[in-house]
Image (cartoon, rainbow, N blue to C red; front, side, top):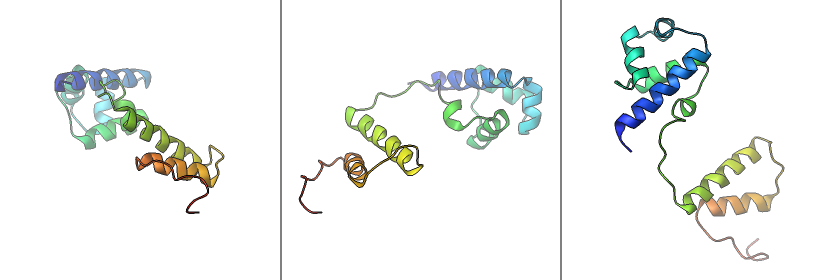
Length: 125
């Protein structure tokens, strides 16, 4: 993945969110505390700003960092890493009360995340 691809994708995303928010580049620049040129360069993918400025842009636009990077090319993960990601999302949902769960479910997810085979049933409990 080339740096330029990331810059262009983030810039395109920022531009889209800015327009959705009904802001001009000048208004966004003023609210974030950067120059109009900075916003223009960022949206065109010619310049990448600091993480702090990008975070402020997200706050002004009501978006988080994940959303700002949503259009960037992704590196393909291994099946094992994908399974861990899925397990962690499910675990987070369980902790936040979005999913009902039992202790066995938590053990299974933690074992997946640790890349271990589940313990045989009935042993070690």
